[in-house]
Length: 413
Image 1: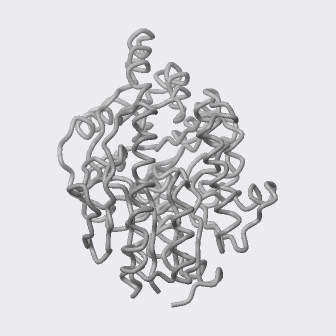
Image 2 (image 1 turned 30 degrees about the vertical axis):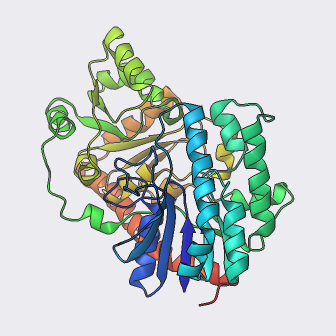
């Protein structure tokens, strides 16, 4: 089968995150399928960018064919980001015939976060007779409205909402990382012809034989273990949406229990939280700079509990799919999951604590329970998470599910 993935922000290991499309593509190639990924040449999510020279760049990475389309670099301002989006849309429209001719896809997967390339992806699917799949990781425009507080009548919100309606009307099926997305789309009166829930996942190779390389985070965690009875760790973006404030609220009581908190990453809330820690004398809360992806897993292995949080939002009733959850599980770190969500992965795996309505008191209660466990019981909790993650969320498993899903949606090849 020939797959064409369209994802504005898709990447590869040489360029850094995000990886979902790459890992799925690599596993599909390994079982005999041909895969092409169309992406923008510049994305703020990556750590490095491919050089296109102003023209589409066709290249092969790990058996995957890539087409990087020329787009402008941008900062964090909304205007420059919109200009990048429009540049990608122009480049994609300009190159669609060449992309269709080179790839002759059996399946076109429109997986761009903002959905706007759906019109060109639909054109390629129609021209080649391919099955059109809409891959949904967010529910637009509701997610954007809740996160940014934008008006439902903002032109960009209306544009994205229109694109979602077009995607649902024209696609042959939807694949979503959100367990409740199907119900959401049905509530909108636009049910897809077929639906599959396929979570984010893990690459087992990331968790095997990763040597430790000294970093401030790794050395800091080792030092904390000399001082504290347990360390609650968080690795990722430190922003408002990640709700790490709940750990700050619990920190004074955690200090009395000789439990430390380690926050590893960067984000708009990091400096504010660091100032709060200094002002309140929270000496058991430590902040560390981000570590390279290759060193994330060796660092996570030094967490006694891995924290996953999210600011309470109505949109979470449809599900969440935080990558760090699967990283913690695969690294055998028990999980403190503080997001109201219908997924219940931690509960199903019996690998930690779920809090649909998290508070500092509930966090403290969970930590008290954890501290009462023997070292063997804590290790068993982490081992259950790892086993569950490998069995259900390895990208080799998810790729097989992907093939089954698109076949049910009518794909042939």
